[in-house]
Structures are given as C-alpha cells and as structure tokens.
Image (cartoon, rainbow, N blue to C red; front, side, top):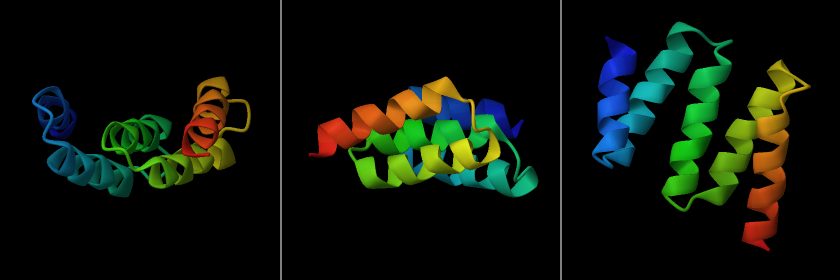
Length: 81
C-alpha cells in the first residue's frame, strides 16, 4: 500500500509527499536500496542535487557495486558545478 501511494504522489508531481513516503519506506526497511534510490531521484526532480547526491551515496554504502548510483552521483556533480 505504501509503495502504491508513493508512486501516485510521484506521478502527479507531488514531490514533497513522495519524499515523505520514500522516507517512511526507508524507516520500515532501512536497507531498502529502492527506497533510497527513489528519494534521490525525487530530490533530483526537485532540483536539490546535493540532497540527491547524499541519497545515492547512501545507496553506495549499502551496495558498493550499484552502477546506477555511481552514474547518478557523477552526473549530479557535473550538473552542480
């Protein structure tokens, strides 16, 4: 139920509500790579690149070989500078 509602928030571009649901999902499962990645993607959509980078770095701490997180961090650093 939580993930369905969160996706609905994302699809209607209610990003602050989507972030709340991603955070709740992360609290329910602190090891969820998907929840942390989704938070990063939403922060990127909101234009908060530094917070997005923070989320993707958390993904890498949990899964060091996550290519998508590594790629996103590089892209966001490039975009920020």
